[in-house]
Amino acid sequence: SKPSDANLRSPICCIMGHVDTGKTKLLDCIRGTNVQEGEAGGITQQIGATYFPAENIRDRTKELKADATLKVPGLLVIDTPGHESFNNLRSRGSGLCDIAILVVDIMHGLEPQTKESLDLLKMRNTEFIVALNKVDRLYGWKTCRNAPIRKAMLQQSKDVQNEFNMRLDQIVTEFKEQGLNTALYYKNKEMGETFSIVPTSAISGEGIPDMLLLLVQWTQKTMIEKLTYSDEVQCTVLEVKVIEGHGTTIDVVLVNGVLHEGDQIVVAGMQGPIVTSIRALLTPHPMKELRVKGSYIHHKEIKAAMGIKITAQGLEHAIAGASLYVVKPDDDLEHIKTAALEDVESVLSRIDRSGEGVCVQASTLGSLEALLEFLKTPAVNIPVSAISIGPVHKKDVMKASVMLEKKREYSTILAFDVKVTPEARELADELGVKIFIADIIYHLFDQFKAYMENIKD
Ligand code: GTP
Ligand code: MG
Ligand code: NA
Image (cartoon, rainbow, N blue to C red; front, side, top):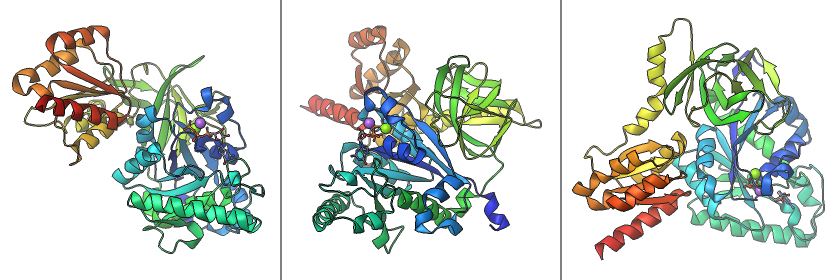
């Protein structure tokens, strides 16, 4: 490869879609693992990350005769839950990625969280491809294990091909109803304007080579600048977890730069910036899932892009969704501590200046941002006067009660994916502050709208 090619980082790809469309199973199929069957209720409830080295992608796509075109070192794939209550994790995953795979079950078409995922992708202008999964469920499907999809399709009877085409047409129509043009990837003449559909089976592997190749080729072709490796550390906290033998750890996605063992780091915490140093840099083995307990590889340093588990002192109150900063010898620590809270401040700055508006509370910074974005959209347009992260406490109710004097209907707390303490609930009832709780953004809006209409009558 040319010298310039050596300087690309791995693209980050987020896999999204409605519950049980086969997101985790697709990754299992590429990894040769069985993560999905180990999940409680077969449902993903955490955000995960897996690194696929280029050599594995090359091997998996060789039937498509594409080895000359691989320039990226690999692919980092982020798995997200499809269950409706995990909008925050879908939001966090989609916020990090260069490209996404939107998984649709060919037997079901577009479902509620398909549409919610589409809204997140549209909001951030993220490129994506559609994996039209479970083609093996077409009646009479003939298995062609791990074959490129066109080759597999040629093996199918006329009946299977007809059913496939009928379902495909229906789903293309459903996408059109969402304002999107889609087409089978090998018939798509306007990539970039028309989104590509790759038929797949996570069980027998048909279409997996096509999906991998399309992801890598499309990112290499259109995102060279974005994928050019930069020394500046760009790193986001995915999850905060207690791991036996390691204490509280953070799972992070390193988007750019290098992390070293011993690096002094700063992360936003619920009680202010956390300053600590990296005790251990751990990754799962390549092709293994970060969120699944297993044996870890210890590293002295790691270069982006990668999913990493960091152990360090004092991570108990780290905020998932926040950025991680590295303090270099010449850096001013105070300056970085301020920067660490910039995420929080940028959110703060979205608060209505008039001082009139509802209070908004969410579980993580990422979900709070998604909620504020949503409340700002013209169709919704609900002003916000205060925000908070974490459970609703008495002090939050006190803050919301200030609005009772100004604009009664705004003495409301919209609580997204957080608990309300019994004391806070009691005080709210006493003062006449409304608290709406939901784990889906849209439900909060529906509740608030119904309440506003009720007030008017
Ligand atoms: P959540 O993470 O909970 O949203 O689900 P998911 O999208 O990750 O789906 P998952 O991988 O858990 O698969 C759901 C079910 O569909 C499991 O029983 C899988 O075995 C099955 N499944 C997934 N992909 C395929 C496929 O291509 N063909 C068939 N026949 N079944 C599939
Ligand atoms: Mg899953
Ligand atoms: Na599932």
